[in-house]
Length: 419
Ligand SMILES: [Fe+2]
Image (cartoon, rainbow, N blue to C red; front, side, top):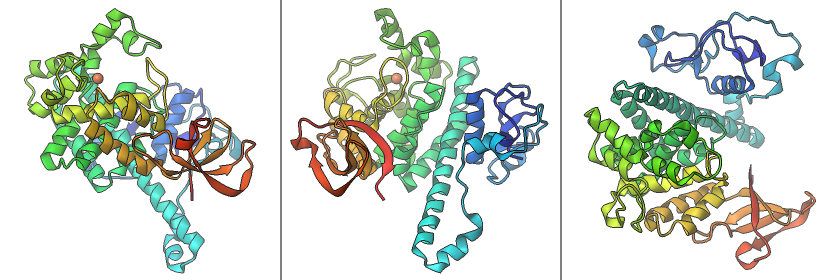
C-alpha cells in the first residue's frame, strides 16, 4: 500500500511508519503536515519505508526491498477514489518502464535506448538518494545519543562512512550530485553528510585511499558534532550574530573534541583533527588555536573546503544561500588566504564536470549553456546563448565569452542540462 495515496495533509496517521532498518520514522497518531507529506513522498520514491518493526528487522537489516514500499495502514479519513483528489496524483513521481526494458534494449531503437538510459540513471540517482537519507538517519541517531548523554555509537558511524566511501570511490561525482539536496530540514544532519561526501571526493582526488579515506570520511561526518552544545537560538538565528554569540559558536570544535575525550572514544588522531581544526585558516587567524597552514592536518584542510562550500550552498542561518557557481567563486576568490589553495583547485576542477552544459540565466534575461569553465574565474564561463530575453529560441545560437563582457554576468544557475 502506498501511504501517500491514502492520506491527505491534515489526516491523522493510523499506523507507525518505519525505515528499512526498523527505525520508527513517524509514529501513529501524527497529524500529517505538508512537510511530513512531502517527506513521505520522498521516502516512498526511493523505497525507504517498510512495515517491519525494529524487532522484525533484525533478521533482514541489510535486505533491500524497494518494491515493498508502504505499510499496512488504517486510514482515519478515507480519501476519494477520484484520481485528481489523490495526494499522489498532485505530485507526479516518475515511474521506471520496468516491464519493457529487455525489449527496449534489444530493439536498437534510438529513442528507446535513450529511455532505457534515463531509467538506469533514475534508478542510480534513487539509490544515491537513499544512501544520503539513510546516512542522515544514522547521524540523527548518533547526535541524539550524544545530546541525551548516552555513549557514542561508533559502529554504525563506521559502517555508514564505509558505505559512503565505497559509493564515492565507485563514482566520485555522486558527491556533487547529492550535494544539491539542500531543500530539506534539520541543517546539521544534512550538512554533516554533505561535508562527508564532498571531503571523500576531494580526498580521492588527492590520492587518499583505504583506511585513511575512511578516517577522513568519519572525521568529516563528525566535524560539527560540538554544535549540539550550542543553543538553537544561536544556530538558527537569521541575520548576523552578536559578538557574544559568535564567541560561543566558535567553541563548537572544542566542545566536539571534549565530548569524545570524556567518553574515551577510540577516534583516530586524524578524526580528532577534523573536528578540532576545521575552522583553522592557513593565514593563521582561524579558531580555536590560530594555527597556520603547515600546522593544520591535511584532513582538516580538506574538511574546511567542503565545509565552506556546503555552508555557502545551504539556506541556513546567517547568510544568503548562493548557487553552486557562486559558491565555487567564493572558494576560488574570497577564501584564498584562508583555505588550502591546492585543495580548492582540485575541488573547483571537479566542479567543472558538474557545471558544463548547465543552463544559466544572464542579467540581460538571455539564457544559454556553460560550454567552457575557467577555474580561476568560475563566474565568467563561456556561454552558448540559446534563448533571447523574451524566452524565444535564437535562430543561430552563438558563443558569449563572459570574460570579455563586463556588462554581462550570470544571475541564476538553472537546473536544466543541454542534451
Ligand atoms: Fe564547524
